[in-house]
Amino acid sequence: MKGIQGPEDLKVVGLPDPTPAADEYLIQIRASATNFFDLLQIRGKYQNQPPFPWISGMEFAGTILAAGPSAKKFRVGDRVFGAKQGAYATKICVKEPVLHPVPEGWGFDDAAGLYVTAPTSYQGLVGRAGVKKGDWVLVHAGAGGVGLAAIQTAKYFGAKVIATASTDGKLEVCKRFGADHAIDYSKGAWPKSVLDITGGKGADIIYDPVGLVEQSLKCIAWNGRILIIGFAGGKIEKVAMNRVLLKNVSLVGLHWGRYTEIQNEKGTVEDVWNGILGMIKDGGFRPTVYRGEEFVGLESVPRALKALGARETWGKVVVSVPKEGESKL
Image (tube, rainbow, N blue to C red; front, side, top):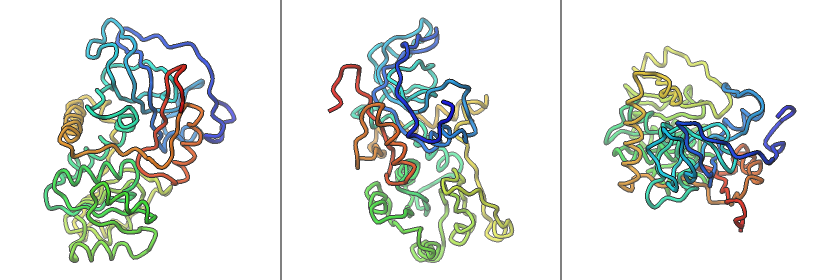
């Protein structure tokens, strides 16, 4: 991996099939989802850099091929999704706690991108911000993977949703997934638009994976909550705290990945997944796979990552992984 500058330097190589440990499953990967943190990790700039040599990718869906003797929850042939370093591959060994059954009626491509975006949005809005019926929720970067998950979650709990995006096409995607209003945040007047839509009140909850806290303070309601999800815009902000005080605002951070590491939060993880799978069963959460272009085979991973990094896509960009010997057509 030395000398890697970007996704175009990734190569497909042959390796022996991994062998599952006693508490692991061997999985035939059928789809892998891309994430912005993959791009950072490839360039050596992510907060979690695995030791060399390593395989890129994190989210996947596939079929159980074999199970270690103490792995009891799933059977050979079960369709599952989950996450582990090394998902841009044909096979992977994974422990039971990070696996879930592919929802009924969903394909591998649909499920591959659930593991990161859905719980981030659900726990942010439900667990951290307490979304409820009648709330105004502003979702920044609404056409992205976490954005579309946030729109659907907020709507499921009865909120009214305003989504922001940067192109007409992405604004239309936001509406297609349930946003009541969609506004272009590349235009500087978007905080005023939010105030106009909400009758001057402002948004009760602002879901921010971009880094727009400073501007969002112009259109947040009294007692509002700003969920700090990430900094896709590339800048970590410094906020004028007097403005937080004057509007009685809460700045609420969310680091979903830490929940599995903290002993007294293990029940939260189970509750969140029960909530997500319940939404799916009720028809309140649809797959968010980008359908503008097909990415088939591991050779297409660099192209998929470049499209993601250039913000040419919406939702979750997923690479289908055919079985060995299976046609890519």
